[in-house]
Amino acid sequence: MFDNLSGRLSEVARNLTGKGRLTDANIKDTLRQVRLALLEADVALPVVKTFIERIRERVLGEEVGKSLTPGQALVKIIHAELVQILGSESSPLDLRAQPPVVIMLAGLQGAGKTTTAAKLAKRLIETGKKKVMLVSVDVHRPAAILQLQTLAGEVGALHCSSDASEQPVRIVDRALDAARRSHVDVLIVDTAGRLHVDETMMQEVIAVHEQAQPRETLFVIDSMAGQDAVNAATAFNRSLSLTGIVLTKTDGDAKGGVALSVREVIGKPIRFIGVGEKVDALEAFHPDRMASRILGMGDVLTLVEEIEQKVSKDKSEKLAKKLKQGRGFDLSDLRDQLEQMMDMGGLASMLQKLPRSGNLNAAALQDAGNERKVRRQIAIINSMTPGERQFPRRINGSRKKRIATGAGQRIQDVNCLLKQHLQMDKMMRKMSKGGMQKMLRGLSGGGLPPGFG
Image 1 (cartoon, one colour):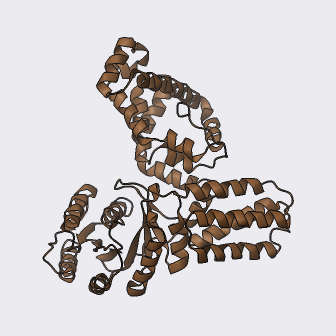
Image 2 (cartoon, helix red, strand yellow):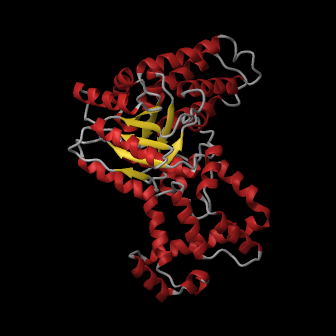
Image 3 (cartoon, one colour):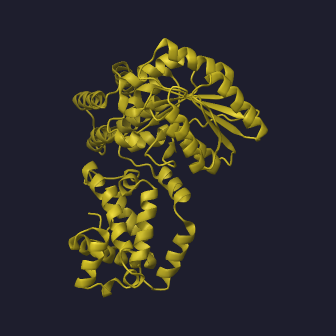
């Protein structure tokens, strides 16, 4: 998400940083570049105009002229206005009510409401320690009911059954009763979607809303839908009084214009963003962190939180102990690292959260973090015997041929993996001798870890 916008604005920030003096021409050109970058990212025109005008007012107010580092001061203003347009501060869910607290999801068809319901349930169960129930009132699409039931079992949530022959309002009644009897903390209601906003749809969703009396009414938006999604959110907000926004499919959206438009247009906070298809691919939205990511400053806080949540502490401690004992980094260890990296969204996702220089472009990140490439590497390691994983130097030509055949890959791919492992083994040995800070400095400077160049 924001790849195109981040590339353009990062370049603007780099050109400004370090300038001891800014002329009227510098400022005019910078604002022009920012305006073009926002328009190319499909940000709504009124939002672009407001954004540029606010920056211009602060620049003319001598906030930049009085600074000893005017270039950095202008970058700071752009960052501050990005934070403002994205919502100033993060806005967590308000669950302070008598259980069961109802969260209702609304949106157009195909936006990802059903998947988002499961993702949100998983997040509430794991981080909020809540007992969650899911229910679908989408009587127009029976497959949605079955899909939600399957996802509920996957994430460990309760499910209230429903049928296409029932009235949505009756389903809500039954779900509320079932939630009370099961002592559920949160009831998530997944509503029906349509291809466009129509009167029949609005009346149905309004009736469900009145019956459920949700504490939170979240509008789910497909971030790739462009300004149509923002218009739909405006229409829903008039009828339902939305409390927040969930942006989905942001991993496939290089523009990010919806995120920059929707908060400003309807005045409701973005609560979460969906960053993948897996049920744990839902991130809390932090405006300040996202603004830093857009300007190429990284998002280290989110990366640290992801590491704490998704990296196995037991495996990490065992590996650290093993390296301290001088036993080396074998291929089983490499497989564990690759699998944990995939759980965190891949290497590209991790590197995007680190501050980086202009040496590392989006194409390099995408190639380095290619999911299929990593999956193939894991398949090659799985094709080896335990002895070969532990002692890679034993792998000769005939063994390579057998491993490649077993994994459905080429011998060249096996050679490439072994070379990557050798480089990582050297890196791990350096880390065990106190080289961790040096490695992190290399990453933040725009470099890739050994074997991923």
